[in-house]
Image (cartoon, rainbow, N blue to C red):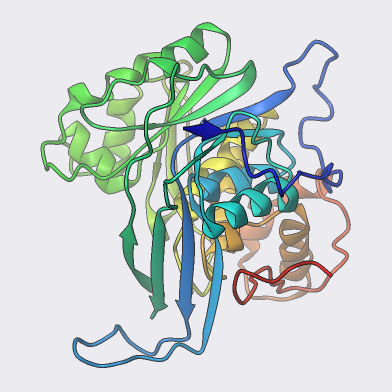
Length: 371
């Protein structure tokens, strides 16, 4: 049995975003939703301040911890913090964790959960993440939520984000595309090791595909991320391949245009959710009709800002963080002159940064109530 959501948490009207990136192109007959997405919400518990990986048979103490909604909530949070009207369809557990995640996303982030549901008797999936030496190790537990009857249909939206899964047909993607939504697709790691290009058949309904370099090369049987992007651009109008510390490369198969942007030099503390944040930044720039290179640069910037903090949705930057970073790099010499030129387009977008850099979003743990 499912119910719409936790009755004790009635979402408040969210505060207006610091910046609406689509303000100049909104029209009265536009859909109420900018971006629709669906997936699994986890409760993430992140241990920080570990000097090394845990050793079998010993007890390790972390100097810090944080908790937040994770999984698909990472991307939903990143989209909402960038000012996009975000609708998330997900199952929430009938437990304290589920109530916490619902409240954090609806009240805390202003995400529309009208298409989400609480599953009675189902517990929330949980991931424990241990961050050390710029990497992380994760342990997860959960059970698949009972299927919704009847299957939900995506609402009218400017865009949808879909996670392609090998061997699984997702009919809602085609329905969303036929209804006029621009579909942005990501893909997970193929645990089977097949990397069958046929598993990407859903790309025919998508406008953009954003895999990482290893995924792109395995699916295209190439040994170069740029060659992989060019091969994928034959299947989807826009192929974007992320290359970690080497930046990102994109090819527009419709125009032949390509763009490459190097990564920003930052101290990475925890890469959890960085890929989700990259997609959110790229979707934002695409819906705002920015040039391809600017979209790629902005996506890389938001991902770089996220890895400087711990956690997934905890670290997703909003416009305040972007503005604070831009103010900082123009005042100090920790970025190159080329970086300053590459991000000069931010001058016409950003509000004045009201707080100094760096900023912190993480909270110590769940369970505290507002007084």
